[in-house]
Image 1: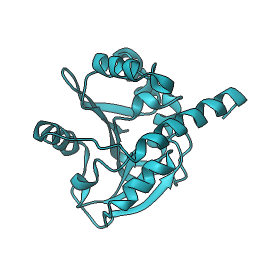
Image 2: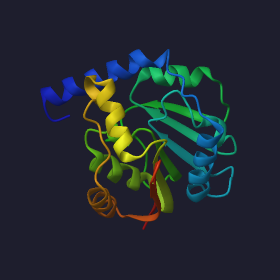
Image 3: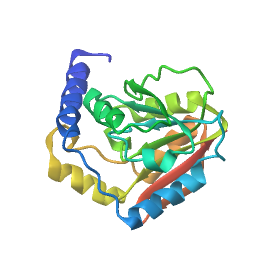
Image 4: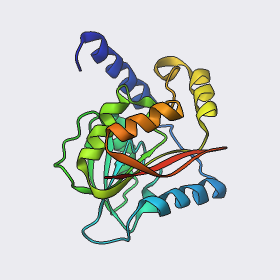
Amino acid sequence: MNSFSELQNANTRKAFFDALASSWNLQLSESDLNYIRTVLHYTLPSPSPFCTILDVGCGTGALFPLLENYNVVALDFSQQMLRVARSRGFKNVRSYVCTDAHSLPFIEEYFAAALMFNVFPHFTDPQRALHEVSRVLIRGGKLAIFHLHNRTSISKLHQSIGGPIAYDTLPDEPIMEAMLQNAHLKIDYKENTSRYAIVCRKE
């Protein structure tokens, strides 16, 4: 962080998500699951013992049941979210890392793919987060940024919740495309109808 105000903002956000962790229970319908499986189909390579996936902003582990054929590193800046995620006991999750996406503690070109599910609007510096994820992806590795709602619905939801996430939004399409290009990520697939998804590949 570059200033005291940024540090305060980060601490406020952590406290907000820490407080939600014990009651956080994302109920996924069959339609939701089918949508997520479609995004994962476009994103993930074939399972391999040497294939590791980074779940960025994993929360309490909503994606873990769909990643059982992969080695997973679960990352979140909320210690309490990670505590709940760990308690679910998924053996394919190799490690739980408490940090934010703006400074990833991993070597370059390590992960075969990265997932950002329901998290991108919460990044205080999304361009930096994209650069960091691109740095740790292998060449040709893919990143999925996806949500169960479209951009407009996400903004309305966050405004209704209020607090530190009241103004957390997804960037407009031209801005998002420019940020991805700056991070050397090329879009392979995108959707912003009733839901939102971008799958991009490291060049």
